[in-house]
Length: 84
Image 1 (cartoon, rainbow, N blue to C red):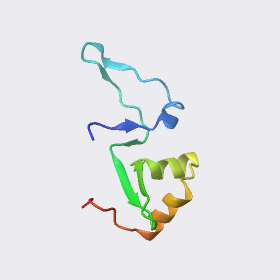
Image 2 (spheres, helix red, strand yellow):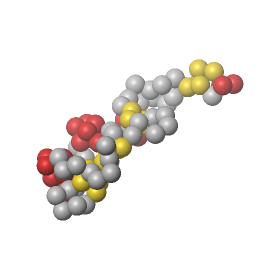
Image 3 (tube, helix red, strand yellow):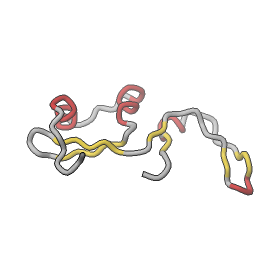
Image 4 (spheres, rainbow, N blue to C red):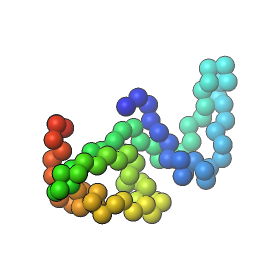
């Protein structure tokens, strides 16, 4: 992945970003969670799941409930084919 992603739910609750140097498009970084990738999981039935690296944050802070198959894949830890 290139760069990172701010939690859009946290961003909605903080003050808007302001420019540090407008000529360089530099902005002050908000103090919110950010992620920079995906996690991949495989369920026991072979279903492949992809989730943003921030999924733990979404569950803990924003009460997101992933699908049952995803939760089971987290619990079982089946290796995802082709991922080292």
